[in-house]
Amino acid sequence: MLQTSAQHGSWTPRNRAYKVVFVVCKRSYNEARRVRPAAGWSRVGRPRIRRPRPTQRRSPVNAAVPDQEAAQAADDGAPAPASRSVRIQQVLESEIFSGHLAPGARLDEVELAARFRVSRTPVREALRHLASAGLIRIRPRQPAVVVELPASRLIEMFQVMAELESLCARMAARRISASQLATLSALHDELIELSKTDRVADFYEVNRRFHETIYEASQNEFLAEQTRALRNRIGAYRRLVTQKPSRRAATLTEHDDVLRAIATGNEEAAADAMRGHVNLLGEKLLDFIALFPKSGR
Image (cartoon, rainbow, N blue to C red; front, side, top):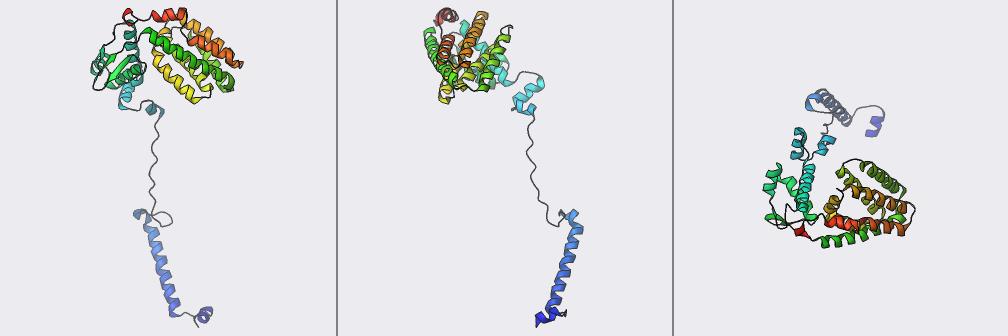
């Protein structure tokens, strides 16, 4: 019955109710559209979705100074904490090697911070690196102390280092990639140019990267980790030896032998060249021992 009425266009009470509801809903919708700017509604009449703003990316300048102290240093034109810690580390290394800081000498963080006019953060970082190199011993709630390392002990460490790096060079001769070989060659060329200047610190850093490239080219991560760990312990002594111009010149010749052997895939020659480069033999041994004050031998 209802279906017949609807088909003929007649309006039943139910149909009229539907029409009333439709008109009311349409008016409500139009009202909502007119007031949406004040009510915060979107174009389709729905509440706007408040999306959180993306986190502001740090600019390269901010990325270079991650902490407040570094930012202050940048504003003042002073060196960043990292460079401060390196400077403090190098000064203390020099004083230890010269005998100015004898074995047993105390290194108090507060006193060093006052001496170098820095906060304790770069001092603490410098002491940590000196401890990893075996030059000092850090004690809980007490000042660090300079340790005594006889030259014989360090010579033993260099012998082990020579064998580790020799193995790295041997494996690199077999596994090095074309890009790694290009990097190694470029670093060698950079060392040649640096040898003509007095930029000893830069020479040492590029030399470190030359050796690091060989570690990576060995394709043996465990071997690379162990070699890096020992290199960090004796790095201060290698840096000191690099101060001599004759040693830097000899380094270029030795690196050239290592590079040629690796480039031609001659594993045995690469291992022998690297072993001879790192090991303390002959004149290199005498030069190394001469670095120590008599009390430290």
